[in-house]
Image 1 (cartoon, rainbow, N blue to C red):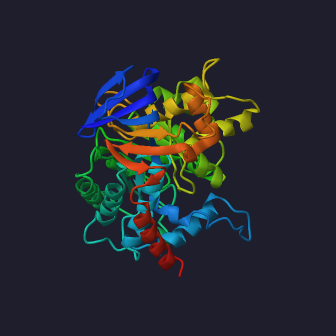
Image 2: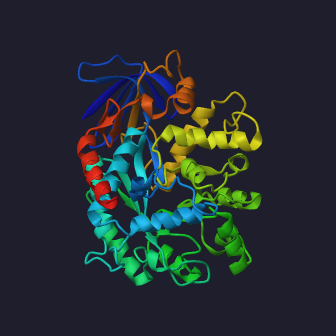
Image 3: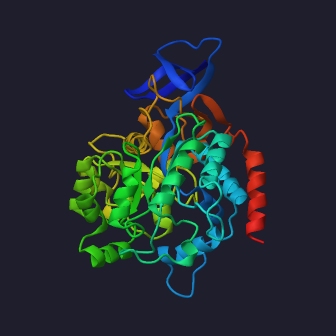
Amino acid sequence: MTSLWFESALLPEGWASQVRIRAAAGRIAEVAVGVAAAPADQRHGLGIPGLPNLHSHAFQRGLAGLTERRGAHADSFWSWRELMYQFVGRLDAEDFEALTALAYAEMLEAGFTHVGEFHYLHHDRDGAPFADPGELAVRVAAAAAHTGIGLTLLPVFYAHASFGAAAPAPRQRRFLSDPERFGRILEASRAAVRALPGAVVGVAPHSLRAVTPEELAAVVALAPGVPVHIHIAEQLKEVEDCLAWSGRRPIEWLLEHAAVDPHWCLVHATHATVAELAGIARRGAVAGLCPMTEASLGDGIFPAVTYQEYQGRFGIGSDSNIRLDAAEELRLLEYSQRLAHRARNMLAGAGGSSTGRSLFEAALAGGAQALGGTAAGLRVGAWLDLVTLKPHDAALLGRRGDELLDSWIFCAGRGAIDGVWRAGVQVVSGGRHRARDAILARYAKALQRLRA
């Protein structure tokens, strides 16, 4: 049994002092408040729940920083995508696992304890299927096992280049499936994660431009009752193309034609109308926001203030993994709203509320829902997914209660993280992943080959 004692910890009911948390088989078995530390307890200053990361393309960690050179014409998401395709064309299975492992180790160091891997790279470099349809799903699971991060694997169905079943381009060949082949990938993915504690397998129709209506229905029907994630309304061009194809905007079309419910996560949803925001909230779905990637790609600003008025649920993701910092994702989400509205503390909710606490709790609940896990937070029955902060970090000195979250999110970031536990196992100590050196060495070897 793991037994941890905290001077202060954030529980579902709020901050508490002198807290002992005991866990067995990775799950919290007891939470006691106002108790003295026992000799067997590991003693810590500040404890908060680990955050879910609901949207990741882990292999793109290797591309971070390599797309920041202006092209001959205006750069956009679409020009970035061409560079990403070139990178994908060079990856072999070993490279893929090495890049994924570093991304997962850095997620843990950054305060994320569970990741939703939107996994669309299925085939070999020439587009030929592997002998094992789950070859690269096995690599994702291996990276999760090595690092210790919790995993919701979301195998992606991708069949077309654009709306109206447009023929895919050769550079998309590593992603492509038909429903029958995707069924085999899905089964192989379930087998790949079977040994991981708390692992979940969902499904991910890539986007409305990459699937037909019939394929969307078939893919969702393959996995009832599990998470369903989809990219939607990320780019204005996508909205315009969807209107030309169907007469409806992407979110509008989806809400009219699919049984969107709390199992669904609508990733990005950047260009949503007021009616669409209300519809997402009414269905109980989660908006999957990735503020750093959305800023990096020039997507636009999600209308979070309006969405909040409808009690819409959201979580955060790291998407392209250009930087991994849970606090920074939350900070940028709030700051984008301040820039858009020219005001402060836009997502704090009621007057007097802490912005950091409001952001943190919303992302914790929405992320857990989107990843199909059990109850979030430091409560009996939940996984012991926990982050300790350095009480003597300059940004946290003299703070208490919600001031700690405000200062972590808006001042300190990942530099204030000391330890991280996933399913009761400590995987980060002193801010460093336990296997960082070996993971980084393997990553360096992969990058050397890819950049040769």
